[in-house]
Image (cartoon, rainbow, N blue to C red):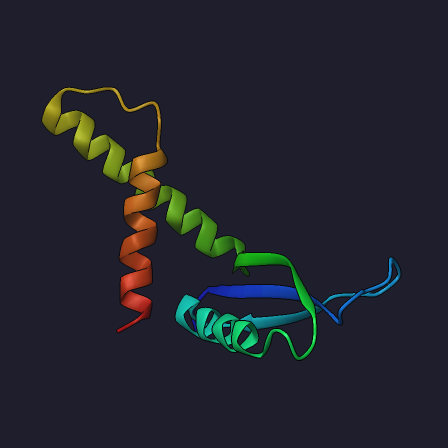
Length: 106
């Protein structure tokens, strides 16, 4: 099991009340969550539902620390090789996330 899961929370029914609690489902991969969501979309019209949250759930601090350390190392290498000064880590973080996702789908 990876350090990262995917969670989706759903309010079931055509007209959920203010006091209704969403049901949460956790998946090991985004592909599993997407397949679950497709199944819900296919049944829509028979019952109602509303997705109230969806996305990645990082479950351990160690993963976050490793991710950030990796991103910092990539930035340092880029700065050293290309004489730059990386300030915005967005693209580096996206690159690392895509690499991890690809590995999780193997």
